[in-house]
Amino acid sequence: MEKVLIAVPSGAPGGLDAQVGAHFGHCDMYTVIEAENGEIRKVGTLPNVPHQQGGCMAPVNHLASNGVNVLIAGGMGMRPLMGFNQVGVQVYYGADAPTVGAAVQAFLEGKLQPFTAEFTCGGGN
Image 1 (cartoon, rainbow, N blue to C red):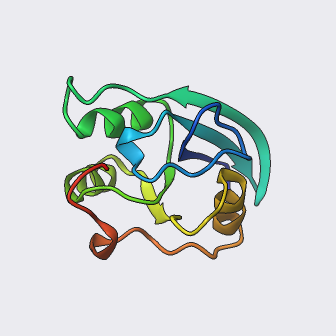
Image 2 (cartoon, rainbow, N blue to C red; image 1 turned 180 degrees about the vertical axis):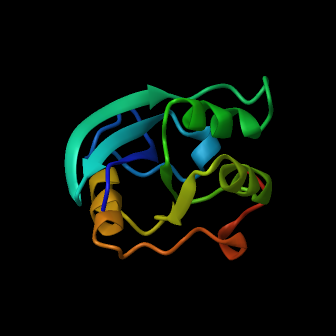
Image 3 (cartoon, helix red, strand yellow; image 1 turned 135 degrees about the vertical axis):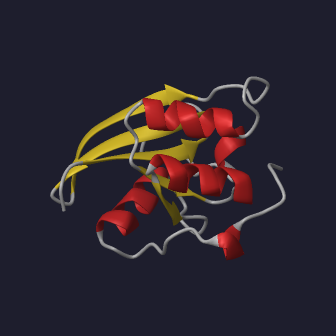
C-alpha cells in the first residue's frame, strides 16, 4: 500500500483515541492520519468547516483541498458521497469502530467495506 492521507470524523480533541463521529459533516473535527505501507506515520487534526458556505459539499471540498484521499465515516448523505467520488476521495464505512485508531487499523488491514448508497442517511443528526 502506498502513502495515504486518511481523515476520520472525530469528537474533540481528536487523535487515535477519539470516538468516531456519527456523521462526517457535523463532527467537531477530523483526525488526519498519514499512513505508508500499512503503518501509521503521523497523526494530526483538521477543524471542520461550517455548512453555511457550500452546504454539505463544504466539508467534501475542505478535505479534498487538504490532500485527504481516504475518508472513514459512520454516516453521510448521498450528495456528499457522490461529491467524494467526484473529487477522488475513497470513502469507507467505519461506524462499528469504537475509536479512530481502531477504524484506521481496520482500514489498513483491509477490513472496512467501501461506503455505498446503502449506508447513506438523510442528513446529520
